[in-house]
Length: 440
Image 1 (cartoon, rainbow, N blue to C red):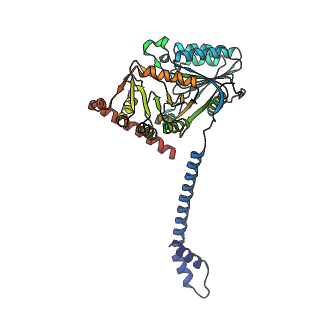
Image 2 (image 1 turned 30 degrees about the horizontal axis):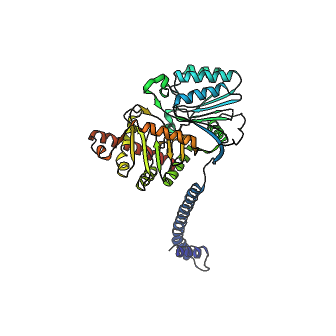
Image 3 (image 1 turned 180 degrees about the vertical axis):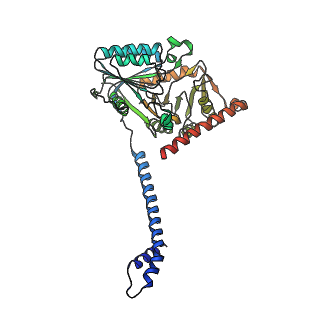
């Protein structure tokens, strides 16, 4: 049909001698056909080009490797307690000789923040370049007095994505990373924030359980680049030397995994190793709202005989509706053989995965929110000592949990089912809004 209409257009374009009415009639017939043809051609062409662009885009995303490579010659230390991380971080700040780079999401006034404020101010006053990047929403609990003390001492203080009511969905983009770099030689990656809730010494038995990783070696350079990228988005300039890629003798292999809205290397690495798992998948997160792809991978792993265990918070949770949304996924997972343990002594805020001889820990909650809105940073590694300590952490805390059975879960009351359904509906709505916003 389109070939025929194009031939009509070409004949109409050539005048016929001695004919008076023919050109008028042919133009009257051919113009609408030609316009329709050109419109249809442009539409088809634009659709085809858009399809080609999408295919090329997703092909590149599938083929593209991770942003930061696997690096050899690193030394790692696993901290099973946030208080241990606080002590090690403060000691490294006190010993800093050149610069301190600190990126944090959750921070509020209290004893822990006061200790870090004093240490950072003292370092800045003795000439150390101190750069602190705080998420604007997560830093709402940081008082104006503390901010003034930091700035007066010479600390370069910036806030990521200042919260504005009129910006609507743009406010949902948050910097969820927790990174600390000192002199380009030492880096800390954790999921804990600077609040008294994470300190057992301050909060007693109501403390939030979390972990941290201390690393030295070539991966510190990748941490530096990740911080510099976030710092530049706030309009700042980073005039500190790039860390040296010194490979440490006898060190282990590690990799920095990053996430940003719409592209999550942490989720890619996690799903890849879940699909390849042969013996064990142990995962803990405070907010278990996984993507469908991760849920399918966990169920398939359990069906092929892999030991899949989830260590999740119990009734003690800082976001009850997120807990209801997580519990709304229990039944299908239990039906496929996934074992679910709910932590009883308090609230566990740790974010880790131990899969055979590979592990990752950091700031990512492995949930849908991270996939759509958050900046995150995790460290992946295969160090034998750290794997052993992480395995001990899991075993110790599994013993403090209550395992959920499928038969008991099916007998839960109707009002809990209703809350789970409503929470799941809200999560799906937010995910759909994020997906539509990304398409526009």
